[in-house]
Every structure is written in structure tokens, then in C-alpha cells.
Image 1 (spheres, helix red, strand yellow):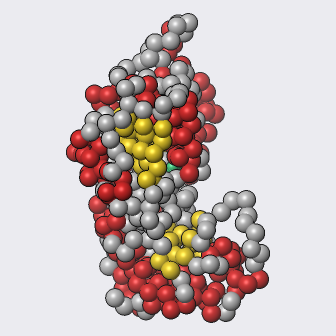
Image 2 (cartoon, rainbow, N blue to C red):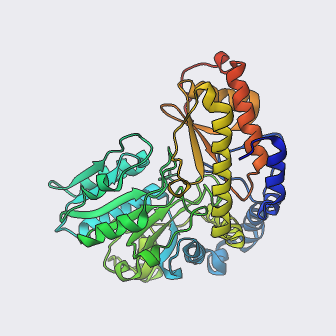
Image 3 (tube, helix red, strand yellow):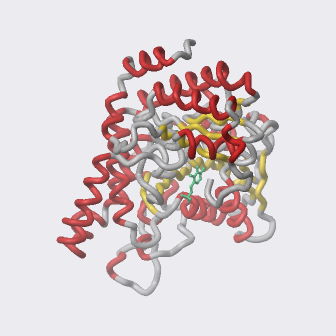
Length: 420
Ligand SMILES: *Cc1c(COP(=O)(O)O)cnc(C)c1O
């Protein structure tokens, strides 16, 4: 593969998704934003939608907004997200945060399947997920345990290492589909069916997958899933998350938080709780309408572009990024901390260097390149195909090389900032 700047231009010219870049607010053309896997860019139409929700709906319609569409928005937007993950429209709802949704589904599962006491996960999982699962296990009482499969290299997880830990006592196999550090993608089909063979359910955190990876929950018979809307769905900082429960399980599971938005006949104001049927029982309290409204235009953009086309471009772009690494950075001691096989890689690439933290700082501060840093040594470059160009990738890695050859990172402190 060629790695010169001309070739990057050529790839952009041939890119059928290139026009989508104009759908986003991009103020500084010289800023290279490669952190869309942490916080996606602002779509133009979202800015318009927020103005409409605050001005016309909240400002003008006031409390009538609830009957004008706010009340059903979690289901309406959930039904759109369902199309991105191969689910039915009534199997997904938007509510709370990913962490809270994971908690609700993990506890609901342990309570429903009290004959089984283990949750199996792995150490590539997002720490918040591990904390939540651990907390759920403790809450459900003695005898319950969390089993954590170990990655041999911090990058990937051999299937056997995981399946060896799934047994007759396993209630749930809870994993993040695309690992937040290395970008490793689990084999959802193989793991879900291995779990089902011994009667366990699987729960997938799709935060780093939804919007860039084709997912077929229905086809694979997956039981449960959660995910985030502010990464590749571009829903905005702190936008509410979604959860999926296979239809036949919805009325078997009980949300452990008995909030009024999960209750049957919510506006009867009965003093005794009775759970609603279907996905509504997995809501908690009043949805954050401003943030929720911002989710929909981002989801619409992904639906318009099509996940398959997005994934195809994502693979081309991460392949290209890795080629640039091989040519320009590997000779300078930078390691690849992501899988080489594109089938096992999501939409970000982690590059490792002992000076990773200071390099990331120099990139942001002196080079106008925004990746992020994940301890101990990962500089993550997120490719968000709706707005990332090949020229940006070329330029970012060229600037990365300059940071090394000119030792620009040396003037930055080694202490870790509060947020990385
Ligand atoms: C981003 C992300 C989350 C985010 O959780 P919040 O509750 O929204 O803070 C959770 N899990 C994974 C795997 C993520 O990548």
C-alpha cells in the first residue's frame, strides 16, 4: 500500500461516504479529530434540533411537550437503534447511562436465574463494566461470583480462554464487543452460542461497536445488550444509552429499580408497584429530553449512510493507518497495540510507546491532532468514517512522527491529567 499524501487524496476522491463530512460542524479545518470513539462530533442537524427542542418545544409547548412526543421518544429512538444492531423495533429502548443499564440487566438476570450464580467476563472489558458486574454480584449475595478471563497480551482474547470458564453455573457471559483499549472484536456468534450450549445468556456492551460494526443480535439469538450513543452515534456528551432485551425475555426480567417510568399505568399513580410489560419496564425515571433529542439526528445519519458502507470504509481506514504506522512509526519504536487482522479489529487503532502520555499531550497541544491516551501506553486513534478523511490520517501520523523525531514531547510533564 502506498503511504504518500497524493495517495491519501486519491482515497478521499474515491470515497463514497466523503459527502457526509459536511453534515458535521467542523470549525477548524487544521484540527485533526481522531477521538470520535470517545465523543463523536456534533452533526449540523443536531444543533438545529436542540434549538427546536429548547425554543419551540420547551419554550413554547411547555409541559404539553410530553404528549407531543417526548413521552414516546425513548421507544421511537430505540426502534431506530434496533435497525443498527439487527433487533426488532420493540426490543430496544433508550434510557439512563450504559453503566446503569448494565447494572439493571445484570441484576435482573441474576434474580431471574437464581439457580446459576456466576457471571463470566474478561479483563479487556471497560473498567466501569467490571465494577458494575462486581457490584451486582455482591448485591446478589454469597455464593455468587465474577469470573474474569485473562488476555495473554492485553490485545486479544483466545476463544478457548473464555469458553473454558463458561459452565453450568454461569448465568451470564457479559463482554464488551469491541474492546475499548485495543479495539479487539470478540466473536459474538461463537461466544453467544457457546454460552447457550450450557444454558447461559450473553450480554453484550456495544458501546464501541454501534454505528461502525454490523451487528445481528436477532440472527444470533443474543439475549441482552447495552450500549452508548455518544461515540460513533454522535449523540453528544452524556447522551442517554440504550438497552436491548430479546422479546421473549422482556416480561421474565424485572428491572431492579422500580421507578415510575417502568410501572404499568404510570399515570394512575397507584401506590403499589406493578411493572409495565415490554421494554418500558427497563426505564427508570424521567428521560433527559434535551440529551435524548440530540441522539436522534446522529442515529439518522448512520442509517442514511448504512452500517455496511461505514464498516467497509472503517476497515479501509484502519488498514491505511496501520500501513502508515508500519512505514513511519514502527522504525521509531512505536508498537501496534491493536489486532492486525481487520476482522478482529473495530474502528480505532492503539499505538504504544513508553512516552505515550507525553506524546499524546504534544499531539493535542502542539500538533492539533486529537487522539486520546489510555494507560499504560496506548495512544488511541479513532476512525469515524462519517467524517474522518484519509488525508487526516496521513497528516496525523506525519505529525506523530515529527513529535518523535524532534522530541517535542520532552517539554510536557509526565503526570497524568484528571481526564485523558
Ligand atoms: C463508553 C463506554 C461506556 C460508558 O458508560 P457510561 O455509563 O456512559 O459512562 C460503558 N462501557 C463501555 C464498554 C464503553 O466503551
